[in-house]
Amino acid sequence: MKILHIDASMGASGDMLAGALLELTPDPAAALAELNAMGVPHVEFSAVRAVKCGIAATRLSVKVRGLEEHEYDHSRSGADCCHSHQHRHSHHDSRHGHRSLEEVLETAGGLAADPAVKKSVEAVYRDIAAAESRAHGKPAGEIHFHEVGALDAIADIAAVSHLMHRLSPDLVTCTPVDTGSGTVVCAHGEMPVPAPATAFLLEGIPSYSSGLRGELCTPTGAALLKRFVAEFRPQPLMRVSSVGMGAGSKDFPRANILRIFSGEAEDAWDVAKMLKLEFETDDMTGEDAAFAVERIFAAGAKDVCTSPVSMKKGRPGIRFSVLCREEDRDAALRAVFKHTTTLGVREIACARHELRRRAETVRVAGTDARVKTALRPDGESSKAEFDDAAALALRDGISIFEARARIAAARS
Image 1 (tube, rainbow, N blue to C red):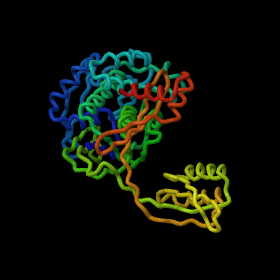
Image 2 (cartoon, rainbow, N blue to C red):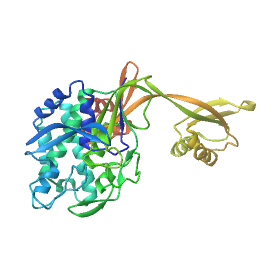
Image 3 (cartoon, rainbow, N blue to C red):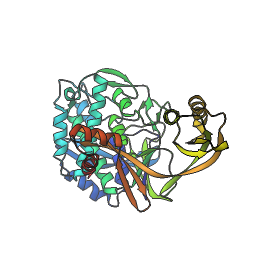
Image 4 (cartoon, rainbow, N blue to C red):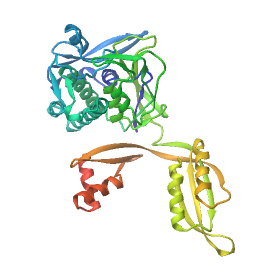
């Protein structure tokens, strides 16, 4: 199984991700020509060699009408975007041309790219727009993007989407993300790092600040990680075959690079150390047991199941088997003793072999549906989340089978 593992210990931005992915392609020059052939309006891609703290890396340069975004802003004095080393996203200002979200999506839809690539570009930009909407307290349709910033961001997103599609990894993992610290100057004034939109995009993603001053993770970088990364974790067991390094544009005391490791997994699954908590009761109703199972799950258990057993004096009983990680043991035990009638619990150390999985959200007839894919040794198996399939079936008056078929079709 092919794995890409991203080292985001210096944050993430679109140009850094694209630069690292470009280095991983068998023929970077051909891949660069493909990016320019996509037809992002007024945009020219080029690969720039950069050295950061003595380490050579590639930065994907995006020029709009012959200028990079920071040059565009500087040449007009009075910039309209966040001035930081990688921030490729901008806000409303009446001095420059602007594009609405629908205009941006229309541009993305017109790219000369694989349908899967265009779908990724549109999804990532919708996520950015939703984050900006929350940050500014306005509907996404009312958010306007500086024309140069919008084209620059589309270019970064399209480049990463195309290169990911070209490399076709089975699994993408990433370390927790360093956001940086301090403030960033924007048209609206000084904003904290991570910027508000970035903070919203990083919800659910492990992140931290090492204390390095500056914006390390941009909205575009965060949105791309959200789209393509299946697991945020330390590097999995893998045989690394190549390393791609993408450079940021600013210099720091640490090498401002993002690394992506490409290689093959040793196995198609991970092994996790677990604890099994087991006990029986003979004085709980089925309803009581069902409620207890829900509460034990809510306490952090990874799996809870029950089975009928025959207890002393032939009394029928219920056996509870709870699987949890060691760090969740105390919370699981509290839930067990609070919501069941047991007086004691057996604890057994064990291991769980877990197939690697990835989750994605697809758009089906105006609604979102979640799909989970298990990466099996001989291929993949995907399944729509039942609640989302059921909601679609009820809304449209169709069977659950038809709802699942529609979700599967939306993925293809």
